Length: 602
Ligand code: F6R
Image 1 (cartoon, rainbow, N blue to C red):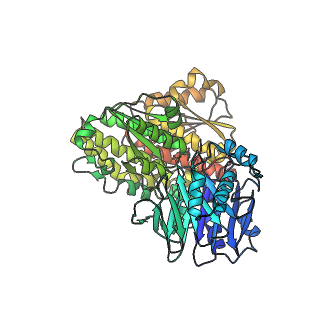
Image 2 (image 1 turned 120 degrees about the vertical axis):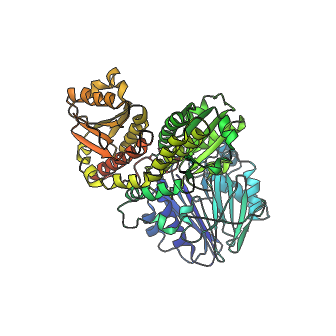
Image 3 (image 1 turned 60 degrees about the vertical axis):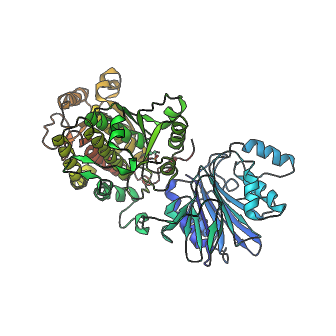
């Protein structure tokens, strides 16, 4: 959602800030703005525009080497120039960009108004500029002023502050919303997301929650312990299209490599098991786990559902998945023998993060399955599995979803092998996992054929996705992909539920995608096709090679990886189907309407 960029150094700040904002566009936003300090004054431009338009609006602003910038996703008040960040105080001395939510904004606004301050925006963030300016006016450093102001603030923030009178310093503060400092050569960068930094530096410092940093061109200070910078693995090319028409196409294509990364060093084919050292659990502790519960939102929740199936199948440990927000608000009974897994690509999703905190408060054992190293959830969980999918820019999750399911297969194998999964079976699964990246490549090689089916979906008003047991979370993820990027209404159902209601909707205008893994339920799934065909409904069957599928008008086949792992492969054609449908409809694939890449508010 909202994005923050800051620069302080020896080069003109504006191009660096605008370029940083451009790299944060994928997160979703509806307005953008920038503030520079020049000759003791603030130069501010902001509007409900794309970054390209902001670049035009700022064409005449130059000559400053210190500035802050923001992309806003409207929460308090509509997307307007006034509500866009940076916000300033009445005297236009202090400029603030803010991610997060100030929970006592109403009270703070009332107090400020009562003391004669005229608030101009509808936002919660504006109060910060006024509070900091009031504290700065009483003397002391900018850092002291920010600290004083924040003492009155309740809520979450990633905050960056610029003082027109002190252009040699920026102050950053973090409480629940990520901020990362980039260390350059006599220059410093600040951002809410690595994407805005990696072009400039690989040396970064993740601010800790509750930390406040005073940033100067030659370094930074906090009250926290000195720590060496983290060297980030992301390279600038990860954030470039590299010849692909959009990031979703790039990320779908990257899956064989990404899958290799999540498996690398973690599979032991000889012993038919896996090693997930990041879980920090001994064999005895693994053996003591009596339940596994996956918690996440959207596609991360569906990936957790695939994971739960794998854990039950391979380890015979009861497992399930639940949307993080539901879990957090239903005052759950926390089971000390359960391993809770917080699943998140971004590591920033507010509901998933809050769930982790709730679990920790109640003494639950929670591990992260997170893609973004250094993200809030990764840091909050002191153990976990990194997904190593590489940066995922497109809003629709593809390679991170696949890597989640692979990480869960590794977990299931590990848990299985400390229980009753035999060496032979363990080896079979380990071998199938090792071969999966290549199998994913084989599915991708069928892209043209899958793309040729997209027309059926582009013309449809509604589409059903049907699966059972292993195919059910795949159907859910397939429907999710189609609806979010093509805006074609798609619903997933368990095939067995069809005749209990939804079958009434089936007619010639409503295509169904039926998942048919080659497993003991294949015959039942073939029966589902018959039920739909008997009502004149068109069917696209997605299955593995070798299984005869009579009745379906179109059949998409993936190579088999064995029944347990086939769900991973069956997801890939559904990504391509959604992608090509969205392309046919001319959608803005990487940035679907109303959606943001990381949902950092509830
Ligand atoms: C779907 C999608 C979303 C995310 C969800 C969780 O393609 O991208 O449903 O999966 O918002 O995001 P993370 O994984 O970042 O917690």
